[in-house]
Length: 212
Image: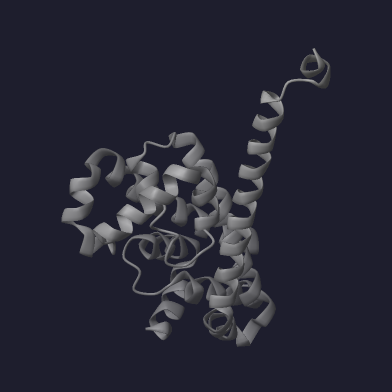
């Protein structure tokens, strides 16, 4: 399968790269962790330029995410549950995604684009909750741009050893995902704490008032 992807990307260039990343968002036969380092290798050989490669991959990511967003927004929960196996989601996953999204939707969309297995899933609660389209596009594009740039750059740097980037993602993936999760939780906790402190300070009477 990897050989087929390599030949397909080599023959098709940027358009095929965008199409493969689009499909990876919907029905991923091959994860982006395998496709993007290959594109980086193509940059190293001179067959591609880094900026068009990153932009093509990001365009594919965005279109794929918009398709899932539209399915959720206009089809609603019943459609997602009916076609859950096709979309790789279960009712329990939808419940969890809804709960996460209700608390910190925009943060989840942005950070979720950096986490395999979650990257596509975050588009569904975004659509169900009718997150403003412009905000969804901006967050998805930003997160996808970071992810695509990182993996294409890794393949570019490794050159002939581009497949090591895929193996490295497999080996350190759990550590990276846990670190991202901890960072997100810490950030959210900090924001909640600051807001609670501000509300408490706003509700406190001034010292002069209390003396009276």
